[in-house]
Structure formats: C-alpha cells, structure tokens
Length: 212
Image 1 (cartoon, one colour):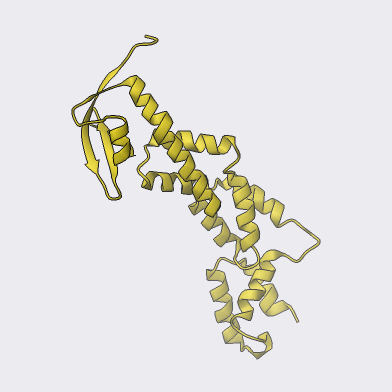
Image 2 (cartoon, rainbow, N blue to C red):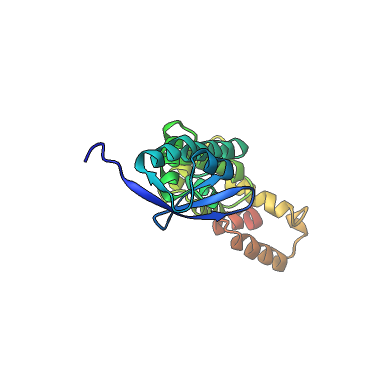
C-alpha cells in the first residue's frame, strides 16, 4: 500500500577497524556505517527503524559513499565493471548498492568496457600475443564479443606492420641479438617458447625461418 510505513529492527552491530560498523537489520546485513553515523541516525541494537529512515540512510549516506568510492577508484586507474564490482564488494557494499552504483557509472560514462578493452589492446598488442591479451581481458570480465570486435578494429590496419609480428620480434630480441647466431636446435626451442606464450605458430615460423 502506498505510503505504508514498514517497521524493522536493528538486530546487531559488528564493529570493524577504523570505526566502521556493519549494521544488521532483521538479522540480515544491511549496510556499513561509521560510528559517527550510528550516533547521527540514533541507531541502537534492538531499536526500531522505519522504512523512511532506512531509505534516508541508504540514499544520503550509503549510496552516496558508494558512488564517491567508485569514482575515486576510477580516477586512480581505469577499471572494468567486474573489477569495480569486486572493489565495492570488498568495501562491504551490498549487491543492491553495487548494482545501483554500476548503473550510475554507466549512465554518466565513468565506465565503458569497450573503451577499456580498446585501450588495453593498444597498450599490449606490440608486446603480447593475441591469445594472452584475450585471456587477460576475459579474466577482467570483458565480453568475448567486445574482445573480437576490438581485435578486428585494432589488428586490421594494412598501413602498419602486424602488431603480433612486431611483438614476436621484440620477444626474440630479448633472447638473441641475431637469429643467424642460433643453431637449428636453439631456433626450435625458441619457437616452442614463443608458442607457449600464445603467439601464432605460422607467424613465429615466418620470423624464425623465412625472414632474411
């Protein structure tokens, strides 16, 4: 019923370090506050809290701080949605607050997994294999379709050298100053090493055995 007031009970406080307190309402974890907030909202174990006061705490304090924390994290370093969710969860925010915070970040353009993936690929494509880059992005929670689209865009420039070939050359340069100094056996070992790093076999062979 519209306008109906719901009565809840503050059942437990769990005090943490740095004056933080986990507040449980009706035996379920509700939110994290500071001792000063507990005093401000006059919360006590066993005390009644109305739905109106509950919403006020969520909107004025909990959700506001979640947004501030997320933005602060992004100012330090770009993050994917999955990484932000993990950070907010570690800060003791509930799933519902995290969902709202992520929606807010998307709405105002603070996070964009496609933009993140494109920047990540550009920063790694000349030193790592496509397989390794794809694996790292998947671990960060980037959708495979987004990854494939980024690969098509970033690896399709015909006016520049294939980034993976360049990455292979750089990896080889760390092992030897000249391929001509390597015996066939050492080339095979180098080929196996590069292959284990995820580089394309045909491209490795092109560099090791076909280029002069």
